[in-house]
Amino acid sequence: NAGVTQTPKFQVLKTGQSMTLQCAQDMNHNSMYWYRQDPGMGLRLIYYSASEGTTDKGEVPNGYNVSRLNKREFSLRLESAAPSQTSVYFCASILFGTSGLDEQFFGPGTRLTVL
Amino acid sequence: KNQVEQSPQSLIILEGKNCTLQCNYTVSPFSNLRWYKQDTGRGPVSLTIMTFSENTKSNGRYTATLDADTKQSSLHITASQLSDSASYICVVSEGGSYIPTFGRGTSLIVHP
Image 1: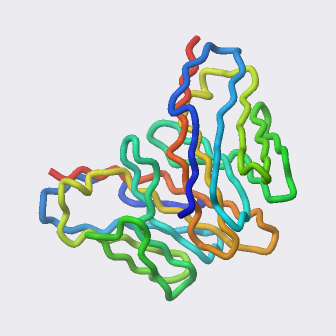
Image 2: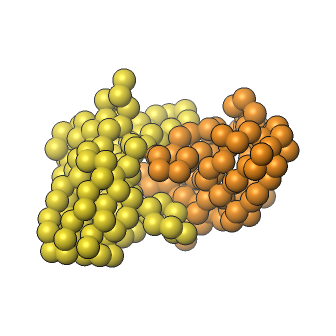
């Protein structure tokens, strides 16, 4: 199992450019998440998808859109990048069961710089 | 509002020493508590997961404790190694919610 994979690993954009961050998981998890991590701020939730076909806003959704393409894939789109979106982006997934031992797995991250 | 507070914010110790990191939470109803290790430039990796009925869980030199009554958890690292230098994140899940609550992490530096 590859777990959670993200592409690209690094990206530099100019202000106003658009791009899509890709995420895929091969663990048959039902829920997927996009976070951003900034120094001193911890991980903040941008959007999540509780199950295939649904998406919901998290704590910091402004400037982003998401698509749950299928059960495996969850993409994050920046329509018009701004310097404030310079960050490290992590995708995560989780399978909610009945045991309470629901482990969230994270991808390796995408380091985005907006000039 | 659900909150997870971690202390200290940062910690420097010498190789071979023990240390304890703290996590206090206000999440309710409680589902589980997870400790993650995040190496610089990488994604978080799970160390331990505990439910309401568990009060201690170990993973090698890492031992987590949970006091659900006082809503506190600790992560104890024994005989620290240079490779323990990382950020340690406490995450608490609310029963019935899809959104875990993250602490801001404790940055641990282990010096030789």
